[in-house]
Structure formats: C-alpha cells, structure tokens
Amino acid sequence: MTTNQSRIAWGAVALLSLGVAGYAWHYLLPGAFAPPGIKENPRAYPWLFVHAGLAGTAMALGPFQFLPRLRLTRPRLHRWIGRTYVFACLTGGSAGLLLATGSTAGPIARVGFGALAVTWLAVTSMAWRMALARRFDEHRRWMIRSFALTFAAVTLRLYLPIGAVLGFQFLDAYRAIAWLCWVPNLLAAELYLARRPFRAPQPAGA
Ligand code: HEM
Image (cartoon, helix red, strand yellow):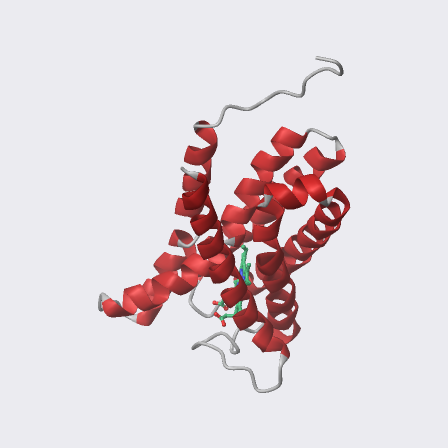
C-alpha cells in the first residue's frame, strides 16, 4: 500500500468509527431510538447504556492509536488514550457479554455476540499485558486484533442494510450477522499480520 492509500484507508476507518461511536452515544440522551428487540432485552437497563457509552468510547479512540506520528511524537498521549481504550473495551465488553445472554434474537445471536465479547475481552487483555511487559511488537499485533473486533460494531451496521436490500428477514439476517460482523474481521487481521512477520525485541545495543 502506498502512503496515500494508507491515509485514505485510515480516514475511511476513522470516519466510520466516529460515525458509529456517535450513534452509540446517542443512547445516553433521553428517548433514544433503538432497532427492534434491543430495548426489550431483559438486561438492557442499565447494561445497554453502559455498553453503548463505553464501547462507543473505545470505537472513537481506536483509530488514533494507529497513527505512527502520534505514537512517536506524543508517547504520553498514546499511553493515556491506550489506557482509556483498554478500560472502555473491558467494561463495555463485559456489559456486551451480559447483553448477549439476554438477546431477544435467540440462541444463535446470543452465542455469536457472547463469543465476540469473550474474544474481545481476551484479545484486549493480551494487548494490554504485552504493553506492560514492554513487548511492543506483540502489543501492536494484539491491538490490531482488538480493533478488528471493535470494528464489528461498524461491520454489523453495514451488513444490516445489505441484508435488507438482499431481501433477508430482519431476524434471520441479525442472527447471521451476530457472527459475520466479527469472524471475517478477525480473519482479515490474521491475514494482514501473517504478511508482517513478528519482530522479536532486540537486546539493548543490538
Ligand atoms: C466488540 C464487542 C461487542 C459485543 C460483544 C457487543 C454486544 C452487543 C449486544 C449483545 C447488544 C444487544 C443486542 C441484542 O439485544 O440483540 C449490543 C447492542 C449495541 N451495541 Fe454492542 N457489542 C460490541 C461492540 C460494540 C461497539 C464497539 C459499539 C460502539 C460503537 C457497540 C454499540 C452498541 C449499540 C449502540 C447497541 C444497541 C443496538 C443498536 O442500536 O444497534 N457495540 N451490543
């Protein structure tokens, strides 16, 4: 990818992420709109609001952590955004796991969202551990996986209208998308990482 193509790709990802984060935060306003079945989820009060607020924060912050300039020129800011991102993923993901157990879309959706939540919590925790251990190449690789999962919130909202245009019933599409919104994202992250070999930390002075 040329530098220009990477900039365009980053801009598109950031724009979609900020758009979906803004949509998520609208739940914090009175009288928020929700798609069918969401407010009927028995765990919705208060977990939908905790989830939308915090997972939305992770979504809005994630893209900025991949800007090499910010990492190199403002390392303290990178660390503070990173801590907030990890906190938002772990709390927003735990609320997502609780919501998953109550999804009114049935067991396929419950297990799909539940597996996404558990994977998101595990992958983000690994990324955090690697940063604390100063294993920065591994940290970067786990963060790429983590953000690929955060981005499920965008892919879900892109696939729902596509499902409707293709003529699928809302519930059938929703159940399939509970899996399709994240499994291909994770595979794409793995393919990307496979083409970039892992760089083991160099001993000091090497
Ligand atoms: C990546 C892990 C995530 C998991 C496991 C997850 C899980 C869930 C679940 C189970 C629901 C309720 C669905 C239902 O009752 O059928 C939900 C709703 C919602 N989630 Fe997430 N979510 C995740 C990420 C995100 C992110 C990053 C955002 C932020 C942009 C987000 C924003 C929302 C919103 C706004 C809703 C309400 C439904 C709607 O208006 O579309 N989620 N999530």
